[in-house]
Image (tube, rainbow, N blue to C red):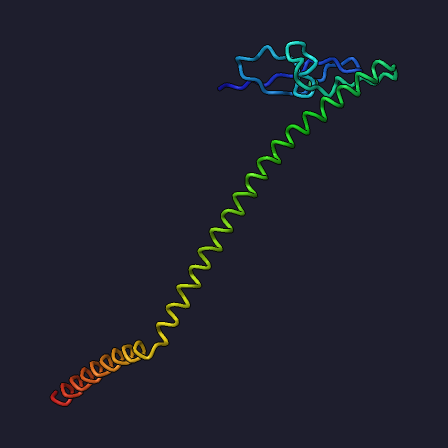
Length: 153
Ligand SMILES: [Zn+2]
């Protein structure tokens, strides 16, 4: 999608335009205001605008400010709730993974102790010793063979 950079046309209290750059897709190029002022465009009136807050000390204006503030806080809370839900989901997943991990760690320990027990059995030791003795005998025989060969040369 091609993005077009436009400048905000919102009239600021000083009489100049806001002029803040914002990106629009060419499809929605009709947009006139930046993110901060978009709520002031009647086509986007549902969107929040920080500039809905007026500086007037007039009671009606103040009430309007409070309403906008409440609206803003509610929107913030909604988005925070979403974040919270996401975090809760992640936390649950972490707990699940931890439990799985602990289980597998427990299994590992069980296997280790079983192997350890098995290795300490006299029958097992004899078997190992038997294997080692056989290996040693083989090595000795090879050394003998080599020595004989060397004497022959
Ligand atoms: Zn603006």
